[in-house]
Image (tube, rainbow, N blue to C red; front, side, top):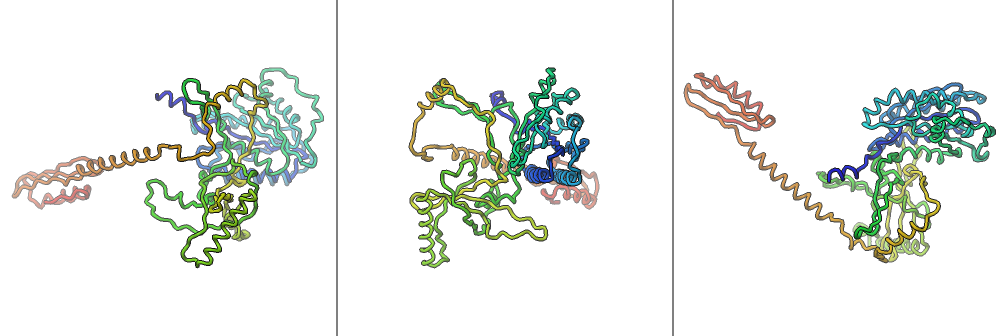
Amino acid sequence: MQQTNKTNKRILFHRQPAHVLLVDFTPPFNNKICANIHSCLEEFFALVCSLAGPPRVPYFSISAIHRYSECLLPLQNVRGNFQQIYNALLELKHLKGDMHEDQSTTSFGQGLRDAVLQFNRQSTHIRQMSGFSTQLEVTVFSCQHVNVIARQIEAAAQSIDLEIIRKIEVVTVYETENGVPLDENDSSQSTDSSEDMATMMDIIQRKFLPNDTLSISDHFKHWLYDCGTDKEYLHLILNDIGSGAMTLKCDIREQILSPSLLPPTASCYNILPELNSFTSGSKKQSASVSVIQLTAIKLVRANGLCESIVFGMPFALQPTLCWKLDWEELDTNQQHFAALCQHLHEKDMVLLTCQNSTTDQPSYAGKTPNPRGHFVILPSEGGSSLLVKPVASKELLLPHGSSNRVDRVVSDAMEAVGSHLEKLEVCDVLNPLYYVSNLHQTLMSQLMKGSQWQQKRKSNNKDQNKPAKVMNVKGRTKGVIMTASLKSGHVTNSSSNGSKANNTRPGYKEAAVSSREFPTEL
């Protein structure tokens, strides 16, 4: 049974590669492109360095490629080093601003060799720190055509250990008004058929990105996904009756980053964050809750709301019954509330709101603005309540897209899955009252175990807390003092032969100090 449980477990984020970024300054690479890369990397690593849990981007290095390869940040830990990463990105931006536009690049091979050399020097340390072996992933950002850069990298393949490289991603950034650049020397493709060259062609991936912050940011956010493929995430069992069940093995792909992994400043993504302060076993009995202010900013069609960006606890809104309001205000508020429900329901709309949007003020004296949460409000049919749910913002959103999509499903697969689905019961309405999660039984079992453990602990403490025994003999006879120590549990004896009673007092005082919980009497 233990072997089965062990084989059915996977380790999260233990196959994350070390990332090396090479930025090519060859024209038409300009200050605008460099500024966009700088801005996206700053925001990306602010997020990465704040995420709790296993490191998703464990190691990072960045180099500028111009007349020679200039390392701006050696390969090092990302977590806890945001200041060093910030300084390196700032140096990248300033370096491009000080450089002439007509400088060409011929040092891709040197940049790749330096990256591999850095990784080899630290591979032992990385393995000792993480407990797992990892690989190197190299990303090249350039304005040259991907084939031009790929040929330069292929030329350096003979002096590189390809076993440690997971992927070399060549990204061409282009201006949208100019379109994707063409490779004018496409006919000069490498004809080397060696085994190393074939391996190099397998690990090189080519990609085109428009010069906008959204596309560049999405590219870096792909680094946040779990790269481990040692074990599947989930088994979806169809028709679990008898031996004819079908099991689909799936991977789980995050759609948004959970705000619970971020510092407490991100509590704005919860409509009532104070509820999270009442954790199990907490002694906190109350909390002061501010009046929440949501400002409507847009109407959204109901069929335009994607479920993948809705997260967190839903709450129902009802017209207030606050006794401090007069009857006329209560009645007017209730009428307006019902009218809003009816309008949204008839128009098939949802209301997009923003928290504290009316209190926005320009930052001054270096003050950082507080984050704001966004929420959607959905109407009910009867007009008696609204449903409010948090939605993801740009910072939390992860890039979509599937890399293993099937273009055409064969008929045999359709028939096999269809036959299993036909055996399942069909219901018109999902009623949660029909489904029990065994939560009550689990909680009662844990509470009973805790109660039994406390009773056993009290019983043990009662036996240990017995007062120290003292034997006192009158006159000039022998006296024995026995003391017990709460911390060590040892019993010590001190005796005096033929001495006066006042001669034993210093020894008693010393024993009493070391065992204050067990006072003795003479």
